[in-house]
Image 1 (cartoon, rainbow, N blue to C red):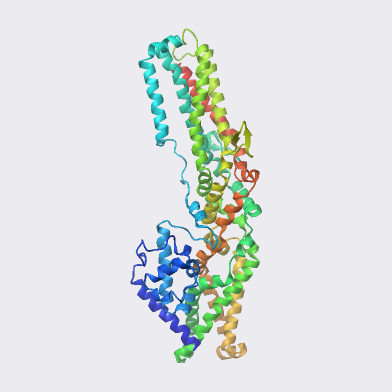
Image 2 (tube, rainbow, N blue to C red):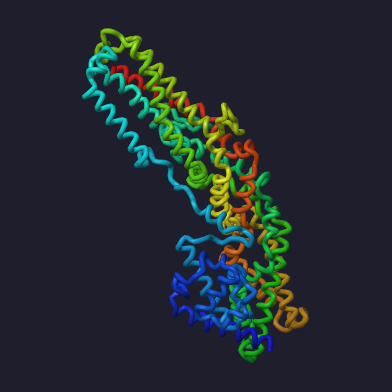
Length: 592
C-alpha cells in the first residue's frame, strides 16, 4: 500500500506538471491590482488567502489557513503533494513562477521571518557600480549658481570694465589674466583629485614600463591601482574582520535545518535514485529484473529512494558539526577576491560612492579658494613690466610653480584625509566634524553586507568551494562513507549479505555498490543546486554582516578599509604635487 500510494503521488505530480507547463508561468494567477504586495515569501496569512481565493486554488484556502507565504514557498514539492495531493505539485509550480516574476519586477528579496521589509527595501537601494565620472550633468541648483557667476563676470568685464581697470590699476587683458588664476586652479584641482581617486582603483592590471618589484609603480612610468595591487592583503584583512567581528562560520551553518535540506533535495534525489536502482539491476541482473512483477520493482525502487533523505540528513549533520574542516573561509575569500579584482573594486566603490562624488566636487571648491589666495598673492608680486612671453622671472616661477606644488599636494592630502578623519565625532564651536565614510556607517554596512553575501559568500560559491576547493577531498570522503552505508542498508533489505553474495556473486554486489556511489558522487554539483536557494536564505549572511558591521565602534569600522590606503596615500599626494607644478609651469610660461 505504501508503495502504491507513493507511486500514485509521483505520477499524479507528473501529470499536474505536464498540465502546468501548458500555462504561461510568467503570468500571475491574479490581475496585478489583486496581487498582495511584495513577493510570495513576504505574504502574511491574510495575503496568502487573498491569493488563493481569487484563483484556481480557492478550494485549498481552508487546508492552508495556518500557513503564511514564506512557509508555503519553502515547502518542497513532495511536502505539498503529501499535504494537498496532486494539486500540491501545481501550486508549487505557480508559487515558484510568482517568486520569479516578483524578482524580475525588482520587488522585495527573500527575507527571514521577523526581518522587516523596510530593511530589505533599503538594501535594494544600491549606488551605481561604476566609478563616479569626471564630467556629469550638475544639479539645477549648481547650474543656476554657475550661470549667475558667469553672468556677473561678463557684466563686470564689459559694462563695468572701466571701474575694474581703475580698481586694479591694470588694463582689461591683465585683469582677465588675474581672474584666470582661480578658474584654472579650480579646474585643475577638480581633475587631479578625481584622478587621484581614480588611480586608487584603476587600472586593474599594471600599465606602463617595467614594474618595480613589490610596488604598483613602473620605471620610468607605470601604474596599477592601489586596491587591485593590494588585493590579496585586502582580502585577508576583510576575511579576518568577518571571522573576528561579523560572522562565525559554525554559527552560520548551524542555522541550516537538516530536514529542510533533505526536503529541498528530495525531488532530485528521488529521481536519481529511481534511475540508479532500475539501471543497476537491469545491467547486472537483467534476467531476474525482467521476471519481477512491476509491484515488486516499485517496492524495491521506493525502498531505495526512502533511504535518500536519511542519508542526506546524516551527511548534513556531520558537515555542520565539522564545517571548519571542509570549508576554509579565509582561503576561499582570498582566492576568490584575488582572482576577481573588478569585484573587489566594486565593493569599495559602491560602499564609498557618495564620498567619492563629494570629494570630487569638493576639489573644485578647494581649487577655487586656493586659486583666489594665489591671485591675491600674485597681484602685488607680479613683475612690472610683465615678463617676456615664454621667459618667466623668479616671481612667476615662485608663485605659480610653488603654489602649484603646495595646492596639488595639499588638496590631495586633504581629500584623502576627510574620508576617514576624524575617526570619532569631534565638535568645534558646535560644528560636528566626522570622517565622511564613517558618517554613513549604517548605509555602508548594508551595501557591504549585500555585495559580500550575494557575490562572495553566496550559497552557490560556498557549495562550489566545498565540492571543488582544497578541502573537497575531506567532504567527498565523508559523503562517500555515508553513501556506502546507505547502500549496505538497502542491500540488507533484500536479505542477508552473505546470501546475496552467494546468489549473484560478491564481485557483482561490490560493482553495483560502487556504480551507485560513483553515480551519485559525479552528480553532486548538479544535485546541490537544488539546495542553493534555501541555503542562501537560511544562512542570511547579508543581515548578519550588515547588522554587526553597523554596530562596530567607529575605530574598528575605520580599520575595515583605511589601512589599505594608508601605505600608499603618499604616492597620490606626491602625484598631486607633480601635477600642480606642471600646471603652474603652464601658467607661468603661457598665461602670465
